[in-house]
Length: 143
Image 1 (cartoon, one colour):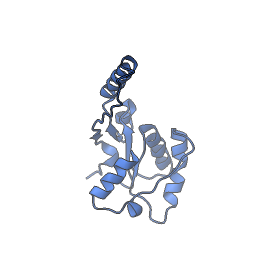
Image 2: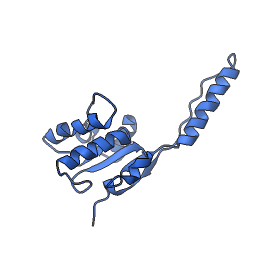
Image 3: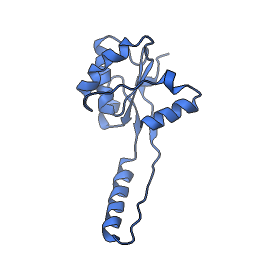
């Protein structure tokens, strides 16, 4: 996910060192990401957008921004990853990157069955799927 974000930044002609900052959190949950909002806001140049590694982290960031009366997306855009069911139900609805969950699960099961059944001749296979950006209100400024 990080590599994909870096690739998109470079494709946009931007310098990743000036454009992106990583914030490490203690756990992959909403409470940890909510607490990192203070770090985000302490930067000399305040970010205009946040990309979270998953939608649960984005939920925590959304709460943290809301507690500080920072308007999404007018003051800060927010993007999650996974497009879980609640993403479209948040206010504002969360822009997220959707993965083809069914195809991923099916491919994983097929690869596992093939590896179990073909132990002598098995060769590892890498399958890549294209994620899909689902644009919602958390990145669309009101006109």
